[in-house]
Length: 466
Image (cartoon, rainbow, N blue to C red):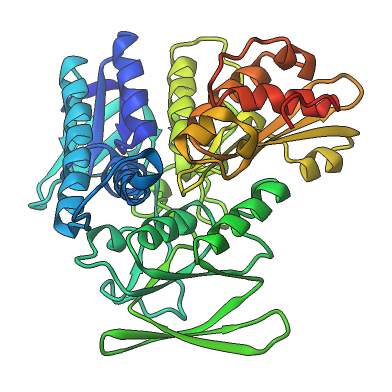
């Protein structure tokens, strides 16, 4: 029976990063993955393939507007098979890259379903049903999450689909209804709208991207409506039924009235569920919370000695980069290092719809809720030269700051390359920067990043270019 210092169950961005860090630190490491390929949800059916589709959609939109740049494009059309081929290639490159990193770092890879037996023993059942047992001093549970089904929506995975199914959709539908206006819903709405689909988004909350700052939500709804995406907020799905190649959807409006619509594809993009089942947790002291997550402390320790949990399995932000940081922290604790808990207020949130949305820190409402007196500043990309050059001038940057000490509390962006620009915001919060620090930071010209400096000037009531 093979014995290890660390065994990781799950090879997503949390699991494989934890395994690499453990192996590079001199620990004998193994990783268990039940999928045929490594990389978990993110690389196989999540972040990576979705962003590949978004890149194709963005490029298609850009080429449709080529005339603005003095260019003529003849015969432009969507080759859906080609788009899907590109998506699959990107996924294959990334999953192959993870497999290479496992070999490079001498990490043993087990293909199969891992279950805890207690006392540091783990059983692995492969695709043929063959069972192998191994032992370990430490286990890191990184099993992630899956699409959540709702009992009143009869998923057929053909016309009534989830975010996994829609990646394999063999056609571009004429009409699509999307349930949920979070990151997943808005991203797929953006993709299919670009490719010519008539899209309607149904959101239970009163705004799109409800976890974002209210000014960002208002702006994304304005831009989506400009793009002819129908946005029904404060609406609730009542029923979804399929009739041949059509899907009939009935929703209730804020006043209790009913609205009916017909589409070719209905996308259920309203949540995920943690994979905490069938892991053998009953053989341990690991506690599963009411919503299916595993209880873990700020050092990722579960109630079972030597067993850690990270990523979508625990009650922290369900994001790939969060899982990676948690995996590193768990390994550092195993190594006996003096680890510092993660400050989840400094988690960057990124949504890759068009225009992109990114944020870090506190929203204006959350800052006030915590007792801060706040100052805010907003600068629109319509006044940024680089955005005008790119012909992508929709959106804005908003800074939320503490009025007393001038400390930056949050940065919120909607616009071109927002998911890249937020990196400066992450550094600003990590260094506990003030608005004055950003004002006195020289931003190169012409860049999109200048808008961040301008937003800082706006907090002080001194915007320069508007």
